Image (tube, rainbow, N blue to C red; front, top):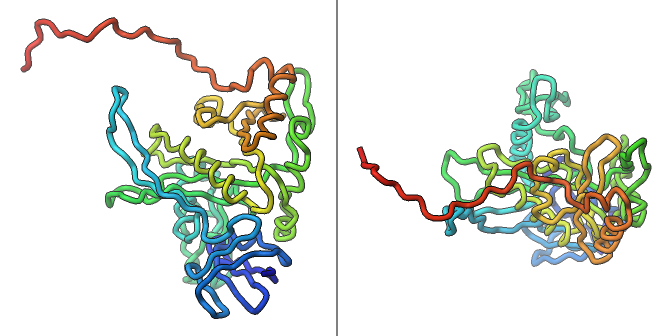
Length: 356
């Protein structure tokens, strides 16, 4: 079937119009990537003009609807071996208004302050917009709705990690990862200057172009995106659940999401996932998953990449072997500042110690 048009009302609500007078309800984040003229395959048991969220499946070049979702157990083991406890988790693309409000709430633990506000809210009744870290009251008496999360773009898509089995005091969302198209340009800092457009010297140019470049006509900008790479723009974990391996788990799930759905745009197979992350210097969870360090950007932030195909692996390995700066670091960024400590020669014995 052929797509005739789309409407994006909110990130969590949109509609797609198909030939034959069919109208499909889905999230705005999914609907915005379907262009007029795209060919899709619809599967449904219903014969009516309006299909609700749970009444159909849709596939284009890659699955579109239902959204990506996986349920899994995350086991924490003792240093001495054996299971200590486990989390029952669900990883899925954000689809409800409450999901995006939870994402904005998680952002507050990282970036919110009086000077840095994390969300833009709009009142549907009077149309006024306001920057605030939490849902603000509107003077007209209407209820503000989340319009955008600061730092994200219309091209951003979000994968959340949901705690399925939880106690009343535990949060519903433990973390999220945000995926974006590649940034338009990237340069490398080298001793004595800057090497421009370094990505295109390592990988084919059409892997990164045409990408999303923003602007007022964001829908047309989205329609032009056709890349073979995705960028992990943010990984955020609830502060009460850090040091539990959830950051690395989110990255692994994001890789699975990209392989299955070619997000964010879902139009072309992805060869590469990369990130620009200053925190990777001090926390190696990207490298634990298998990312390789490539270079520092002109602004001094490290770039790490994960090849999804043998072709990408070939280009990456060639760069690490042939480039003089890359050959020096060998694809490794994080270096522990702690030396090795020799273990105890035997068990600990307490001599002359009494209880009480």
